[in-house]
Image 1 (cartoon, rainbow, N blue to C red):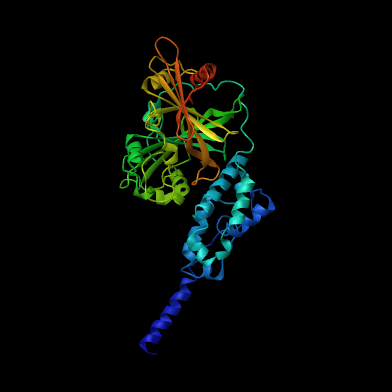
Image 2: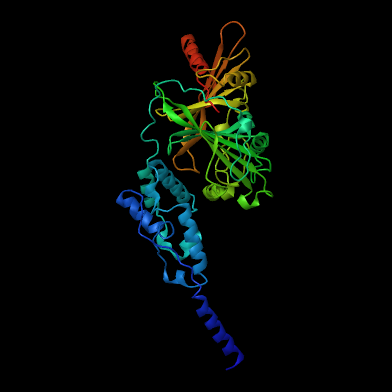
Amino acid sequence: MNMYGKLLMGGVVAFAVLQLVRPAIPTQPAAAEVDVPPNVRNILDQSCYSCHSDQRRLAWFDQIVPAYWPVRHDILTARERLNFSTLGARSPAAQKAALYEGVNMIQLGAMPLSSFLKLHPEAEVAPDQLAALKAYLAPWSPLPNPRTSPVAALPARSLATVPPEFNGFPFDADFKNWKPISFTDRGDNNTFRFILGNEIATKAAQSGHISPWPDGSRFAKIAWQQERGSDGLIYPGAFVQVELMLKDAGRYKNTEGWDWGRWRGADLKPYGKDARFVDECTGCHMPVAGNDYVYTLPMTTAHVPGQEIVNNPAAALPASLPHQPLDWRAITMFVDPSAHTMSALYGNDPAMQSVDAHASASGAAAYVSGSVLALVTWVERDDPHWFGARIPAIPKSVEFVEVAASGPTSYRSFAGGGVAEARLAKDEEAKRASFILNLAPAWLP
């Protein structure tokens, strides 16, 4: 046998021996399968169960070593992230949250994996199938329960004693002083969110230098449960959590350039069971890797090349306004579901000092002289990065209330296509000013 024949024979033997190095992929009957309608189950079965279930479904070419090894790794990783064979054992809210995240992964093109689809085209989710999944989830239905009493302020506590996350990421008590870069109305779980940025982040958003975000950028995403008021508006209710992100491309290169943390409830308990909770963060943000792993579209007038990176329409307030409230801190927000609008209440420095001084009380703050409040109302639009969420779109109106040392509180309204000044009847102005002054702040721990 010549040299080439020996090499070929050796290769065949080595290939055969490799087939014996085949760690098992565990398989077992479904312990608590997710309970969904048959049409939804069929879509999940076709496109998801190969990796996200305890079933073992391998094509013949998947079983050939060495290709088998990365296939096995992907399956075990996918099961750990989401397993439809056991999802039914979790709470109904957790089940729906997993399905919402799955739909978002599909619509953003992150799932099924493109590498998987190349060899398994039958797993692709067709547009009508994606529409069926969205119809089943049906966000914003039903509306949250009506509010029966004012939201009580959270108990005062020292934020300096909040423990770090399990990965060592420290809690940053200064997040309360950061400025909003966007707001979110989440119909998938009936929550509101402020998305705040520190000075580095807000300056980056204003200049458009966010691809990537500069090191030192910090975000806070604060969530409250939604409650329906007697007036039909949806207001922030109980505090849910605050999530923090910090950008440092070199230091956190193993977690996509960011460090992550989440603290839940009034006692600000760190999220997760151990440091591996970060895998959940990076996995969730993976579909927006092209946006430096940031879901939020910051409200800014800066134009950034690319598709759906910033939210220019929401920042389109005329320079002729007496104040530019988007540069201020936020006090609260609400949604008018009948008008499909979102409103955010901003305050200048004296107003925010009044809010901060009132932090241990419930109800409206007592604003000191010199306080200026600005209620900005936008038409809502669907968030292109998250199915089940809405974000600000075109400004509809801006209302200013100024608290004077003596004499009547002044009110001015700007509305319409050009957000031009609009005169109201005196009694209507007084009514709107009273409404704005009596909006309760969305309380924080």
